[in-house]
Length: 157
Image: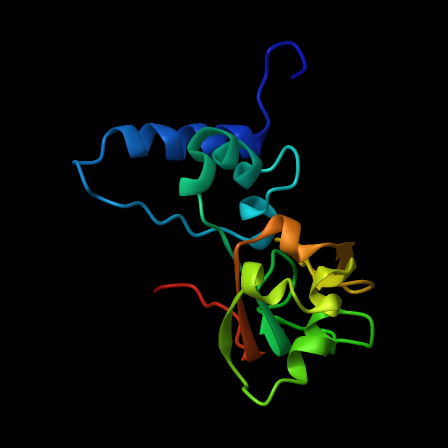
């Protein structure tokens, strides 16, 4: 922290923790956020939630082969880059199923899942140059939703 200030992700985690303390007994909490926020990377919301909730924090990453995404920019939506050899998305797209939920703990027996590879990471801004970042998804997520095609979100009117 610089001068006692907290990052956006730490404040997001603080809000989730506050909400969890105000739930009725037995109630569960689901938080939806972009992959970069829910990941266990140091300094991300998921990192702080893991430290607080320990094994009760289960995060789900989301990725896809093709489609469109919404982002802050001059267009209503943007095209995703097709995955290339060396990305998790390319490997996952080779499965006989088009859409599935994958337990990364169970899949960690697969060498290509355990390896550090490119993983789609777009965020809130258009990514024209590179949409994949090197990471090890087994260390960062518990579950992974894979879809063949993504369709950008639209504004509610």
